[in-house]
Length: 429
Image 1 (cartoon, helix red, strand yellow):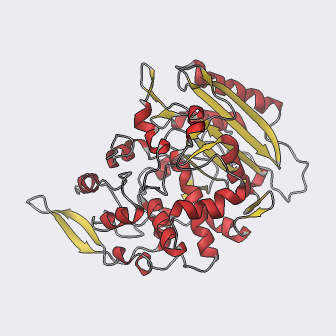
Image 2 (cartoon, one colour):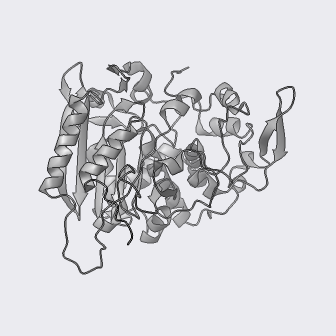
Image 3 (cartoon, one colour):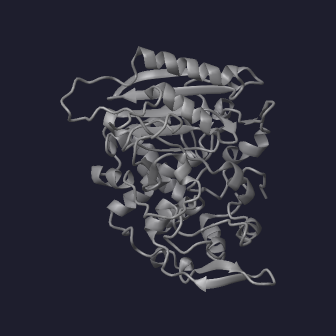
C-alpha cells in the first residue's frame, strides 16, 4: 500500500490546496485602439529579473515561464535547476508535477459529456452516482462527542462538484478530518469507484450550495466521467483531450525513458530549500496505479500545458482540434458561485469567483498588495506552486513552472507584477 504525506488526506490538506489569482491591465479587443502588447521589452526584462531572483534568493531551485500573446510566443525563459543535486538545468523539456492544474483538464473532459447531452449542471449527482443520494450533514457534536446529523436540505448537484460547493469537508471541529483520514480516500491502490463509495459514507460538513470548500470534488467529477463515458477516466481523458491536442508528454504515468526529465520537488523553510525525497512525490507517477484522481496527479511539460491553455483562449479549439464549443468555454470561465457568507480562503486570493474548475476574476485589484491580473481572466495553480492563466482581453496565456512546497503565494504575486507591471489603483475623483 502506497502511503506518504503528500497523498494522504492530511497531506492533501497541507500541500494540495493551491489557488491563484488575478487583476490588472487590459486592452478591450473591440475598442479600435492601437494594440499595445503586454509583453514588451520592459516586461521581458522584469520577468527575467524576477525568475532569477526566485533562484538566487533560494525560494526555488529552478523556474521556467512561457507566454503566448495573440497567437505568438513572446516569452520563454528558464533559470536554475530541475534537479539541483544532479545539476540538471530547468529547461523546456523538464516534466513538472502539476498537482491541481490537473483539475481544469478534468473539467474539460467532463464538459465534453455535457456537450453530448449526458447531463445538465443542475441534475442531482445521485441521478448518475446513486451512492450520493440521501446525504447526511454534520451540524455539531453532542455531549459525548458524537456527531449530530441531519438530512441535507437539497441534493448535491453536478454544478456543486464543479464549483466546490457540494459540502464535502475535512472540518476538524466536527471530526470529519479523522473520518476522511481513516477512509484513506485517495489511496493509490483504490479505484475512483472505491473512493466514491467511501466518500459517500462520510457526512457532509455543510449543506450543499452553502459553502465553498476546496477539496475532493474534482475526483468525483472523474468518477462521473467514468460512469457517463463507460470507460476508465484516464482513457477518456486521453481520447478526448490529450491526444487531439497532441499533449504527448502529459499523463499520470511517466514512461521510464522520460523519468530523468521529471523535476525534483523542494521544500522551503525559513532557513533552507531542501529536496523532498523522490519516493514521496514521484512514485505516484513512476508506476501505473489504479487511482487516477481528477483533482491532481498529472505531469506535463510547459509546452504541453501551454497547448491546453491556448485551446481555452481560442474558445475551445487549437491547431485544427476542436475540443469544446466556444459557449462551453465561456460557461466554464463564468463565475457560478452564489453569494456565500464565508468561502474559507477563496476571497483572500483576490476578487475572484469560481466557474467550472477555474477561478474567475470578477473585479480589479483595489490595492497594490492584491494579486495582479485582468477582469475576466480565469486560472488555476498547483500545490508545488505551478501556475497558469488565460487572459482573454489580451488574448494571452501564461504558464509558470516551479516545484516547491508549501504553496508560494508570493511567487505568484511577484511573477504577475512582472508580467503586467505593478498594480496601480486609480482613485475616483
